[in-house]
Image (tube, rainbow, N blue to C red; front, top):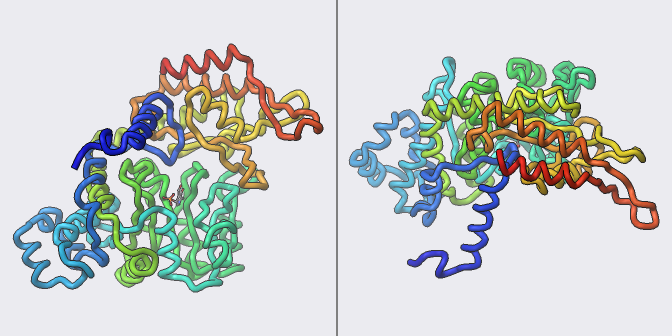
Length: 458
Ligand code: PLP
């Protein structure tokens, strides 16, 4: 017993600093959001303390929430009959996981695929392990995956050479049509027919436009492949109807729970097929992981309960409205927005289009650094045309967190001006070779200072 301040003042102080940083800055990393206190309480609860390898009893999948929470019946039944967990002492763990699964199935149910048609696994520890568990379940080393090129917005865990996927599987990448800057479904179809992948992946970390899941389905069918929709970024938007749902089209859907869903760190796998569900469950445990993080699963159950509220729906819709508005504003202020804009909560800004008198271009890293110095937190990002993931020329901006803080169109217009003011005022340059060839950027002090104050006032 005891409080953190007394027992470990060093960590307590770091937490205070981090909390203050989050309150002081405008966080525009699209994959970040702040969790409700109630979710945090569940994450810090006694469920942290236990092991529960295995899964909830199968019949709880078809139970309503009220049936799952019928304690006397469930717990007696579990104690008498269950051997689905490798540990004893897991009767409440069983129920909290069953509850999270059920709430998740209800949140993602569509008119065609009801909650009882969806098999949910809430144990993946994060997005990349969830995808790895899918590959463990369905692929053999050397099998082919067709996925979005990392440079164009794909994710590391979809086959980047530095990732396990890129080492163990044969990765074929699709990209965008250079003229429209939207996904090139014809190219995707051609690659699918030529390379016959086992899995086609739809899903992205920085491609901001809405996909056509029906077309993805046709492409996967043409190759006889599974369709995996990794909607890590978009899960909250999908629940609120603000982004197309892949549920009726994909064989497997994966997503993280800590981005637009506003839940604890973790991930989920959903499928409509009972056979696939059994394989995927084994892919997660014992294929990929040991014991589930039940505290996070309890937190997820709470976050999913919040997704039923009108407040959650409005938050997601406003998040997209804000992102679209910001993209238009930045374009109007002369910045280049790759992909032409956004249909979601994020966009990328091409810093490379900002050049100095000697022709030096602003890099994504310099752009993100200058924004950080005025109090706007974002990340550098590859954009179409980049050739190195280490030297990207874009900055990725997202609206989930600032929308949680209450930003609407008027704030966004002011924010767009601040971002455009500082980025367009940057003058990139290179020092003479003798002093090192790293590119740098200058910014007039008054522009910088005004932007910093304006961020504080927002
Ligand atoms: N998949 C996509 C599309 C993502 O954008 C991300 C994270 O940003 C992940 C998977 C991985 O999630 P995690 O960082 O939780 O492993």
